[in-house]
Structure formats: C-alpha cells, structure tokens
Amino acid sequence: MKTEDLKALGLNDDQVQKVFAMNGTDMNDLKQQVTTLTTERDAARSQLGEANKKLEGYDPEWRAKAEKAENDAKEQVAALQNDFAAQTAISSVKFSSESAKKAFLSDLKAKNLPLQEGKLLGFDDYLANYKKNDPGAFAPEGGLPRMAAGTSGQPAAPTAHEQANAALRAAFGHR
Image 1 (cartoon, one colour):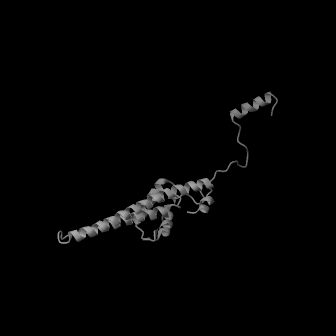
Image 2: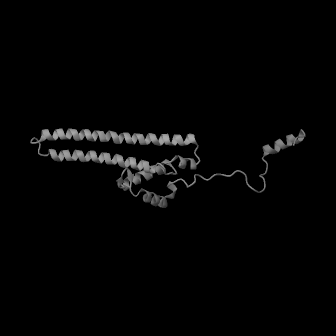
Image 3: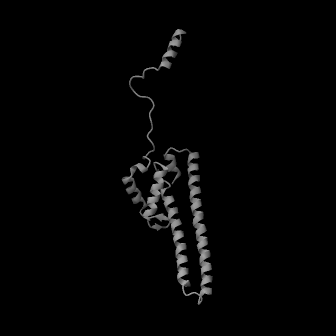
C-alpha cells in the first residue's frame, strides 16, 4: 500500500496517515506475536536440549516426545507467519463489507497457499479468481458511484410550502 495509491482514491493527507496508522497497528501486533512465539520456540529448544541430556537412559520415548513438541512449535510459528502474510496481502484490497472481508480471509487461509519470503505464492491468481466468482464481495473499482445534482428538463412542480412563500412575496410586492 502506497501513499500515492490512497491519494488516488481521493483520501487527503490526514486520512492517508490514519489508514497507515491503523494498518501499522495491526501489522505491529502480528509481528509482536511472531516475535513472541519465536522467542518461546527458541527457549523451548534450549530447555529441550537440557532435558534430552537428563533423559538419556531414563525414558525410552523421550526422543519422540521431544520431536512432537518441536513440531508443534514449528506449526504454531508457521500458522502465525501465514496469518501475517494473509493480512498483509489483503491490506490493499477493497471489500464491500467486513463480512465479505472475513469470508475471503477465511477462504484464503483454508486454501493454505505456500509461503515464500513472507508472501503468499499464488495470491494474485487466487484473488482474481475469487473476484470473478464473487464480484459482490469487493467494492467497485474507482469507489462508489457518485450521485449527480441537477438534471436537464422541466423543473419539478413547486411544493405547497413554496407556493405559500411565493404568494406572500407577491402580496408584499417582492419577487
């Protein structure tokens, strides 16, 4: 998402800054979660190494238990990385409603696109296909249609209020 893109949509500088602030808050929260889980994973690996040394000879299944714990930690980190990549990928997509955004995000996560360098591979194709299959989920290109003021043709008939005002003006000699 770029400043120029938001300004092209008709947002002023203050609105652009607010959009970036809101997006930054969401992204910082997700980055913090990834950092926290990575730290927890590293601490668990350290504890695992120490425990492995102590468990040698005590528990014949210790190695299987250790591998399971490590795999669980990796899955949690991968899930957070995928969530972060999905949030980043849809940050510039305009949806017709919050419900449409949630449904799209849910479907995107279920698709389980591969992750490479923090980006979802095949996201653009998935988005294009989704737009083709469910165009109502997205806001129209160029924003919402604008209602024009004024029309050509005959003016509308005056209302009773307008007729009363005209009669009073005529009675006092005003036009």
